Image (cartoon, rainbow, N blue to C red; front, side):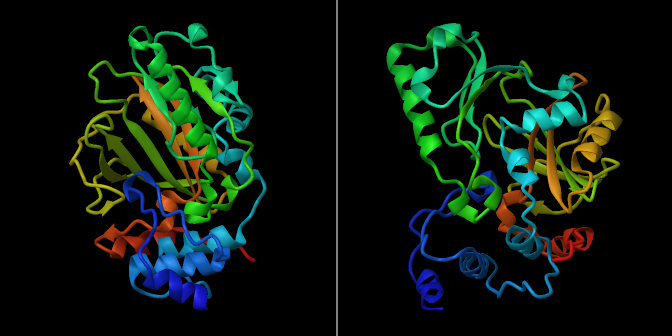
Length: 305
């Protein structure tokens, strides 16, 4: 108990942007339950109810502690999940792989195409490099990229929100083809919130290259009046090519899982898999208005312990 009180009284050593799902990395002496209770109280200003959780954010903390299916480790691994996607919905949904390495010094930039993406397989963005024109890179640039990738590899992402699947992922660097939309704003992310194989809500993230905006919709693309994880952009999706196919992919990948967010891209009707996220914003992003935290909570049926 003294450890928890100390955590609440003292300044956070490292606070990351919650919109990008990055959180504190400190007080490693707390066990998982102590940490989650302390940090939940710090964010929501109330106690975490693990005995009878009601909100989405509470239930995500419960899932961290009590739903530890080893398959989630593979599905959270941005490299190994590719086999799961291939076997479940088909290889055609995978972004083409350019390479995978254990060490950034192993990367031969001469063998990479002019456009590519480098990222770590175990975290959420640290070390990532998006290259749109390799020709402008000099030796100093390449060394900086490698240094940042090493920092990404060294990051213990598990400690930031105690999302246990990340704890034992064998850390690697992955290179994939760059997906662009031609206007420089970055491609649109389609993030399906799925509950036991049923997509209930879609988050569309736009303008990632400059000032990312998050807009939520029901599965029929009707806008939902709340914010969570970032500012609304009041985006109007219009007709999305092969949208029914996107829903089908999300349903298939999420089957049998109490909750998972399935991230997809859609480039002129060609659908690509992004990632599977079991703990959206690590369960620490505020809903505005708060009632939507309870709506999502009603959608999430917890498994038996």
